[in-house]
Image 1 (cartoon, rainbow, N blue to C red):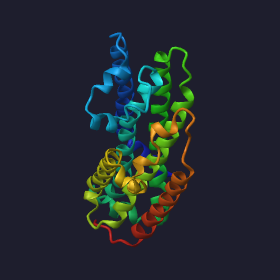
Image 2 (cartoon, one colour):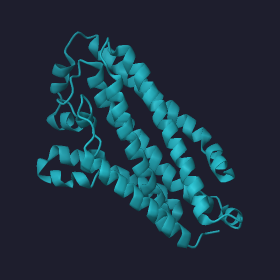
Image 3 (tube, one colour):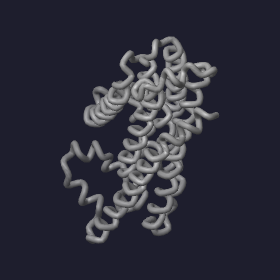
Length: 265
């Protein structure tokens, strides 16, 4: 419990900055919607003039951009990127920071098993992720609701936030597994961020090229897309099961390899 509380305290400032950032992202995104809507021109017509590749990347054509929920669907990918980057970096650094800060000798000579230490750290990471997700969820409901003009948006926001939580937890254990496997844990954060960026670029490439659609199982960004979940689409049960399996496997990797590795003191 002491380790759990200490980790929460050590990541408190970082979490506050991330939460402020995601709140400002929601506010600025919907303010952009207001500015574009006030021009009197249909947003659907306005965005169709953009290059086809950019339309595909942003999901334009899937959403009714004249509605607040449709514009939120476009904004969701940026919220998702922020959430997954935060989660991947947190998962990688929460284990690696003891060796980075030269405090591993102090911590691991305590009469506490490595399993308990890993558990406390991962629980602290999950707590940070849930708080980040709730801030994003509440911000989205409050801000998007102001522009909805009677449109029911809470259900669509809820399902996208649950999907985002799935991906946050998945990228968290990707980061922690990398940290457990690497001999140089200082680079775990950058490698986790690199994998995240690679999978995001792959998801964009799949949208641009239907012939590689089979690769959608390789990139988690295709598992919970707003265009598939919103408007009653719900979750793809296959992707949910795959996410749970990957989460369990990567969590096991974290425990098994971190307990075996020699720590740099």
